[in-house]
Image (cartoon, rainbow, N blue to C red):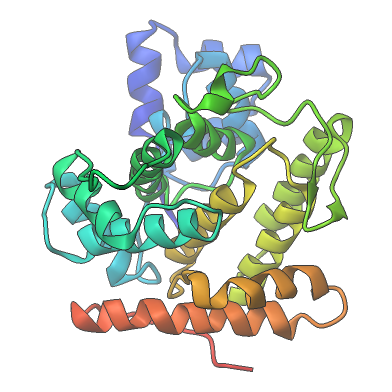
Length: 316
């Protein structure tokens, strides 16, 4: 992957810190300093230590540039988002993903209401209807999550990026008023999913670091690797609430990053999806097949906009 460190040099200049000073403070070798100038890969651990040192986010110091394996879809989504293009693949992806992901988690907003909120930033409600305020807030927040996901699509996964998605999703909701809820941070109270015990709050940080470390140290990635990460993330269930939506956003991001057609889980796939998560250790094919079906559903949208994808997994 081509890497651009212009952001790092910009941050150093703005903060009046010399590269040599930062290198000495962080005990960075001369070989690492040379990599910054040549645009070579530097470990995620090193980049995170630099971000902490400078008080900035990963995307502010390094730009992971698209290369030949990144999809036309990523380029189209990024361009249409940046130029606020309406009626294109970005527009329809926002509505489809937000509606599907919120709906299977219990949102009562209809597909048309979701579209109306995105297109007008208002909500049209019949006088006989009642709408949960949190459903509206989380719909708007999910739109923002998708924007953030697209902006960071080529970046490695980090705990900071994942926590940012949760913070964006849950900010302004009734959950956010609870002191113990920890918007944008790991859970403080034990929780369960589908009757299954999840990782204890005291163990979440270590388990997330382990999961991300193993995933980011791979030499190559398959669609199954992304689904496997999603399964483990949901087993950890790191946040008090919103884990399913954050997990599916991460999976979509990673499909963009590695050139796979993303998948979307709608109401018709909901029970198969939950079964797949529950039965993963017995038969991985259940969840993989469900995600491949979700991939087929998203392909229909790509076909409508003549978006060509290079990599798509074969059905098992």
